[in-house]
Image (cartoon, rainbow, N blue to C red; front, side, top):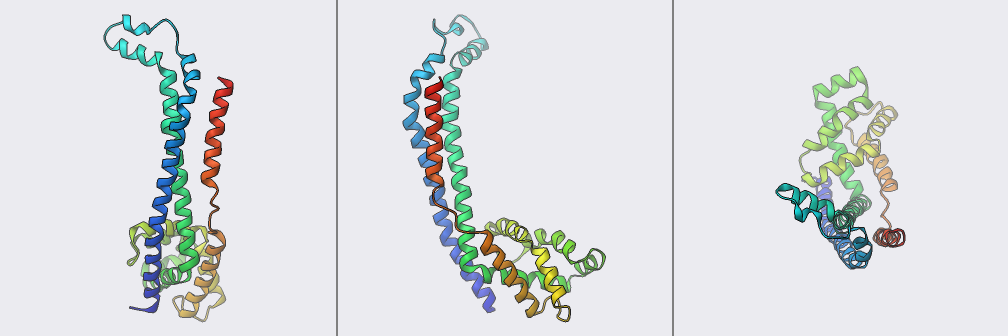
Length: 242
C-alpha cells in the first residue's frame, strides 16, 4: 500500500470519528426543536381556542363520512398549530442540524486530511485520463475542461477505496473547487510532463486543496441559538396578532 493510500486511510478514520459528532449534533438540534415547541405550545391554547367556533360541533348532527369532514373543518385551528409547531418546526431544526453537521464534518476533513484525500483522487483521475481511450478521444475533440466536467461525477461514484458516504459530498466538493480548470491549468503550465506525472499531480493537488481550505471554513456554532430565537419570535408574533 502506498503512502498516499495510507494517508487516505487516516483521512477516512478521521471522517468516521467526526461522523459520530455530526450525528450527535443532528440529534441535539432535533431534540431542542421538539422540546422547545412542546414547551411553547400550551401557552398558545388561548389563541387556538379563540379560532374554534362556539356552539358545539355541527358535524355531530351529520352522518357517514360527513362527520369526519365537518369535524376536521371544526378543529382545523388545532391541527394547523400542531402541524406548524409540533411537526414543521422540529423538522426544520433537524434539517438545519443536518446541514450544519455535514458542513462541519467536510470542513474538518478538508482542513485536517485534505492534501492526502485530494492527492489520492487526483492521481487516480489523471491515471484514468492517460490510459482510458474514451477519455483521450474526448480530450482531442472537446478539450480537457469539458472532458473533466463530463467524466468527474461518474469517476467519483465508481472510485475504489472511498466509502459510499464520502462519494456524493466529495463530488460536490470537487465541482465547487472547479477541478476541471485546475487540471487544465496544470496541463498548460507543464506541457512537457505527462498528464499523470507526479509533478502534474502535485500541482493539481496543491491548487485544489488550497481552494477547498478557503471554501470550507469551520461553520460558526451559533446556528442553534439563531434557530431558537427565530422559533420563539414566531411564537411571540402569533401571540400578539391572534
